[in-house]
Amino acid sequence: MNPPVLDRLDPRALADKSLSGAPLTRDEARAVLAWPDEDVLSLLNAAHRVRVAHFGRRVKLNYLVNLQSGLCAEDCSYCTQSKISKAPVEKYRMMSAQEVMDLADRAVASGAARLCLVASMRGPSERDIAGLEKTVRAVKEKHPTLEICASLGLLKDGQAERLADSGVDAYNHNLNTSERHYGEICHTHTHQDRVDTVGRAKSGGLSPCSGALFGMGETPEDILDVAYRLREMKVDSIPVNFLIPVAGTPMANRNDVTPTAALKILCLFRFLCPDSELRVAGGRELHLRSLQPLGLFVANSIFVGDYLTTKGQAAQADRDMIRDLGFEIQGDTASAEASGASPADRVEMVTRATRQ
Ligand code: SF4
Image 1: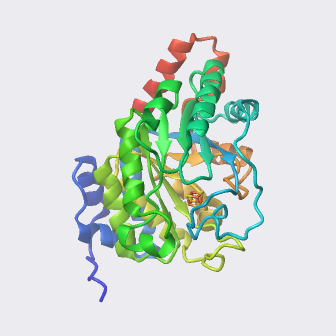
Image 2 (image 1 turned 180 degrees about the horizontal axis):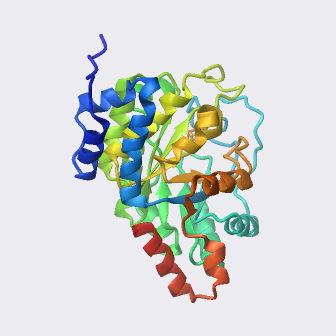
């Protein structure tokens, strides 16, 4: 039986609690997910107060690069690049340093503050790490203010430290769902494996980025479990993804998330993790649809351009949306480079913008 949901909650009290640093109770969090659709604006207004307190009106743009595509030996059932996927995605091994540099140039031109280097694999080999160290050093030499996040699967001891030494700033590894639900979506590694990798990234000096994916048949209790877990883990950034169902994957026919349900999930994460960068990530266009701008009243970060194997909205449309909302793009790397500031000054400018 589902637990009863509190009614008559004052959304302003939820914002006050979040701003004080205290967690919502489980009953309050459950009520956020069950909020009446017709009153969702009151919830958004409260979550917006928390967003503004920590991030002002800034929106961070992140640019995704699929370093290695379609070759993973894992069996994550939502993923187009898994060994069980029959989706017609491109297959190629690690990109060359020059290919990554070209995309880094494009990221900077699009206003992105962070370059996310993602490879489909269980975890990186010695060769993968050595290749990436060289690539990252070259990209940082040319674009010192561009943050670099690596996402290479499960890390072994010592690998995070090497990535950090080469100039990688952050490491992404999503928990995706609750520990209870994890065994239903993947059988080749465990939820705990993912938690351990986020811990290795953090202790190795990388900023931890870990989020979730919704629309995979999870219950509201699963959503609460993963949200509280990410709060406990104190991750710096949280990508919230909504499943893009792709033909050829076991989840091809799922389409469970409504636009208002997606907004309520974003509000939940904003209340529980008030000072973590919250990114509306994959599935933003498909699931929020015409309500996309409302998502930015709660989240402070988006991907610009395409996702790993599916198309996103054109970068110009994202910039127009941000401008129409009266928000501003954070840490515009191209402007910082054009200003003629020294590399050290430019790093300081981005660090300041992130902390503000
Ligand atoms: S480990 Fe990553 S790339 Fe591999 S199947 Fe899972 S989600 Fe896809």
